[in-house]
Length: 470
Image 1 (tube, rainbow, N blue to C red):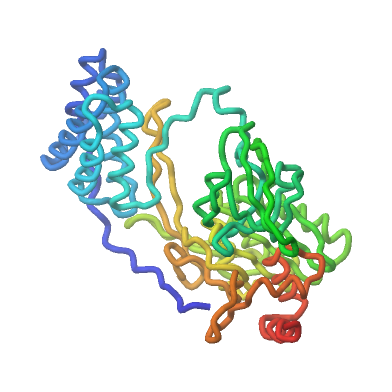
Image 2: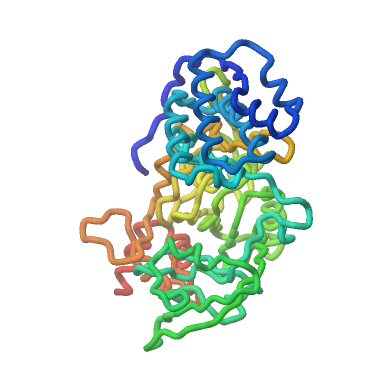
């Protein structure tokens, strides 16, 4: 495990926020009609500092230059002061006003004058400003009215139903999701996607090319081990509903695949373990978090707690002046004493990293795969008004037990599964292409490595087994 990255000591509390008065925003609204009560209320309160007034005036003037005039422009302009207020009150490290405004004004001044669509122009300015201090902050547009969202349930997306990882300059299929276009077309774990719509695939940047509108076609060029030449398969995108959790038994090993931490994950986990153990006691467990981008922090905490019988789960720190929070595991534990592996990759983020880091730090599980994304932070979306969208800000960072930072670092596997052949000096690295020989019938290379690790009893016995097969 890498050297511990200790959480920094909390700095001194920042000065309290000031409220701003709308300047040009009020003028725009007065010209367009009447000033809403919410905007009028914003003008009442402690007098803002001269620097704040000047910064907001400058921002509103730049927005007025860039946007097409009208009622909608006035409504959006009135929100600029609320954005500044919210940043001062809630951002973990509020920037100097001049820094925020400089970036926002530069983004606005790059647009043709008087032509910008109000909401898009507002989003452009806010996103440019918040990017100066928070890489994960952004403006969240208002949700479409009921009936106009395309009818997709939470967690659903439009695509072809492939879980992929970068490999050999292309994309390797980890698993086709059941009952999806990819599964119906016969794609298998280990297949390489080397082209999309006639253009060579180049790895992770190509993932977005697989998404699109439902009913639209996409052609994949596929190369499969044991076949001489690639071939092209035509698929039609459709709405894909990912199950929160899938489980299966690979011999005496229970494989739990979590696709998200949105929804009642911990309850689904308990049910899956109960169903699996009713068929017999597993001798190993694999928790597959590859491609799991996270979700609800509380579900990540509950999932890690479920496999721990005590000790710290994680801790969280918000902005200066707010209390630190720590979670402790209770005595109840799923599959106590059963050897455990957690699979992660670059698509594992947020709550997935919390779970992996917690189980690793507590010595409950070995982590296999590739280093995770490094998103050890919590974002909160603050509404800006009724159907006016919201401002998404990073409001906390979480840490593994021992105050080990995850944000910006990710979770380093105990055994790195390399896509290619590692160098001679590589330590704790295993070419995952060698693992299927040790787990017959399992085409998913990462899962094959996890199964082989459990059956061998650890990294060193696994290395010896791999050497015997070469």
